[in-house]
Image 1 (cartoon, protein in one colour):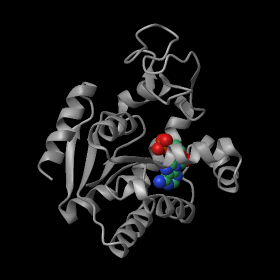
Image 2 (cartoon, rainbow, N blue to C red):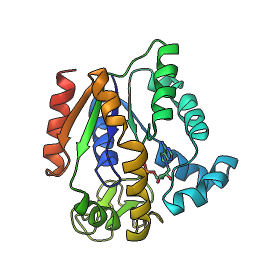
Image 3 (cartoon, rainbow, N blue to C red):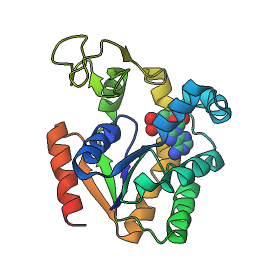
Image 4 (tube, helix red, strand yellow):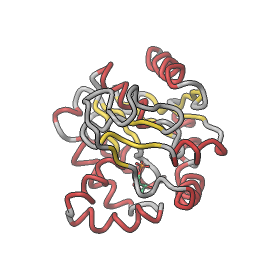
Length: 216
Ligand code: AMP
């Protein structure tokens, strides 16, 4: 099964994708995570993407399409994938359709995570991640069980994304509205778009996603 989680920054795409990956054996393909790894490694792609990401703008389509095409072609993606953060523009969506058609694959569902924009900045500004295993947390909504210690791996090191601040959020939201939101009618017309309530509690959002996928 191949699915896309679509929604603005802070909608909960990464959290839900991690859980789907664990439970369904699909692979989470987060272009944001791939780009952050490229920035950390200092690769050519990372050097190009760093400033753009810090400004909250979108990395050029040709770089993103190349990145996702090589990743989707790897063996672990053959049994199914969850796209988290891609596509973000109409050109990326068209390129995705073309690359899937070429390899005899298709999209099963596109899940729209419907959220209240006013809540997103609070969600994004409070989030942090275990530096060792990548588990996501939030100052207010999901603290570790013991303060300062990761529930999953026991690490005491956490990181916060540079672009998770109120100022950059404005640019990221503007990019979402102008460039990514138009994908909703695109997938609706294909008959594969399903909406879940992204403002519900995390477990309830997950339940709704599983219900959508069960009907896939
Ligand atoms: P995310 O972790 O999905 O919020 O992505 C973080 C940042 O990476 C975005 O604000 C963009 O600068 C960049 N990025 C991630 N995915 C894409 C994409 N599909 N197209 C363009 N830029 C992207």
